[in-house]
Image 1 (cartoon, rainbow, N blue to C red):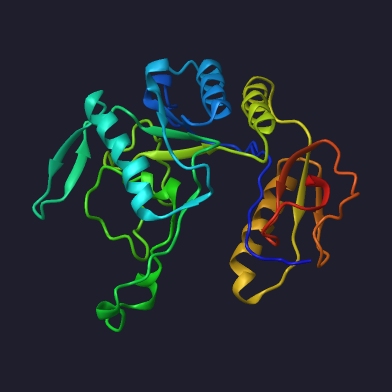
Image 2 (image 1 turned 60 degrees about the horizontal axis):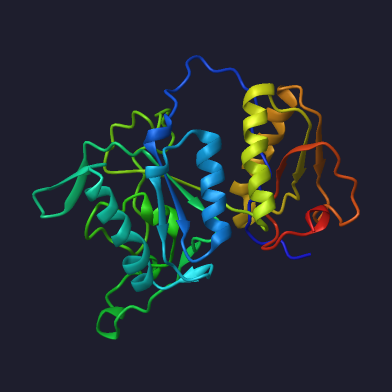
Length: 283
């Protein structure tokens, strides 16, 4: 079975001891973005907002293609620019310019964007102009991106689209609600194979917050090594954390992922990264 990069997460909430709780987001700090051409996308956005007490004024419908991948021009015109305009109209932030003339948000009132199923997932790669190709380093040619990550800097103008931009919040215990890096916004997504699955994700999360997470941890962990070592180490750490939290844990160390007829009962957590598509018990 093909074992390429993918993290498939059904639900994760390992209850580990913490010394202080981060400041939680409040409903009016969240904006919900859906595809206005899809009635089911709008209905899911309204269902999420209702259950999370998010004001209806924080729901934004965008007319976007019903595709998983779009080009950067479509992203700019159909997603980023309308959102920036909406943020300005609603006074959800202010924009200033730094010494280089780059627009940067401040006094940000919205700290999280929740994208709803129906919003495209990624931006396709664009070819570097031929006159620049020889002088452009290879990693700078990688200008494809997830829409989620691009929107985290949607208010910052003219930032480089090739390669990576370091995340100032990486590996720091910073709450999205009080993040001092106001030019950034946290972006999440409610998406799954079907809209029914998305509804269940919303309701299950609420249940877990009230009752705690009960069930078993299932992990696909075939130690492949080489370029896979870092990801394998992550899953190995999840294995240890799950066991240390007294959660019943099953680890599949075989080459293939869990087979189709595997009785994956009472699953609370699943991690694996060896297939590009859902398979096995998830079909």
